[in-house]
Amino acid sequence: MKGLFCLFAVGLLALPARAQSADYARPLPPSRQALWVGMGGGVGRFAPGLAGLDNDGSSAVTMYATYRFKRHLVTARAFGVADFSVFSIGSVGDYGLLYGRYLASGDLFLSASAGLALVEASQQRLALGLPLQAQATWRPTDLIGFSVLAFGNANPSYPFGGVTVGLQVGNLR
Image 1 (cartoon, rainbow, N blue to C red):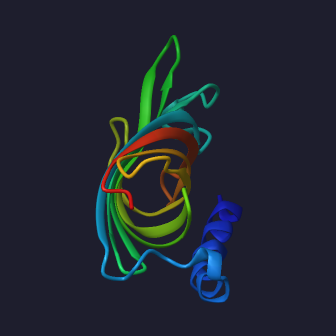
Image 2 (cartoon, helix red, strand yellow):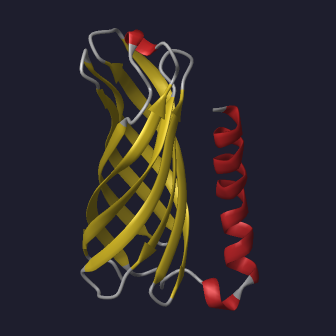
């Protein structure tokens, strides 16, 4: 999980420098604001031994709303990873608020974000966590986009992460 955290931290720090050095990757005009929602499904993993759950074949679900202004992103998210084994149904997830930066070039949109989240594991106490996410989105129209999203939550009690593919709907450009 430390490697995942380092990867997101480096990516988040590198986005502003990259945006200033490349003409093709300039953000959308500062006067433009946008709001969209997204959801996706995929695979995920959580810490071994979490609530006695098996970590093979875990499913991931992502739901989020993102507001873009100038070169900034603010995202409210509800992400989770669930184990649907024969003997138990268990999950871990978070409810977070993240700040991020982005690059946009034509139909491609790349972003990285980090923030603070409330983490919940099945039938266990709550914890605070550091939610991380990186996303690549293809936006063929102004209203619909298709994304690949890598996410994680670095916390001492219930760390988890995953990759999903999904759909975005809203004012994307």
